[in-house]
Image (cartoon, rainbow, N blue to C red; front, side, top):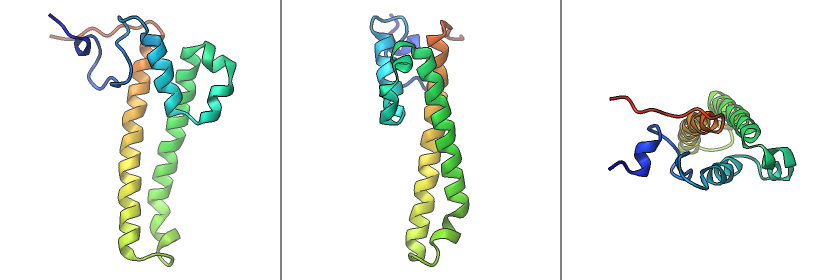
Length: 125
């Protein structure tokens, strides 16, 4: 008998119920808002239209990925004379981890966005 995790593609966010379950869209909206700046909650269009919210979340994450890449590229020059090499190395590691986390979240947003548009995932044998 298939479980809930068999109803979604690999990598589906744990915080979001599968689309076949009641309240899935509510869980998707809550998760998407958690990925966005808090002020996004003030926009009625985002609260009323989850597919619009998913696009805002995707664009926000894309910007954050670019910011992490920019920070990673410039961190040595910007911090080299201000902090020790071990702190610069720690900052580089933090940018790298954050960039990977943001990319993974972006992939999850795309999965949720597809489901919000009515696309259904079908497992392959």
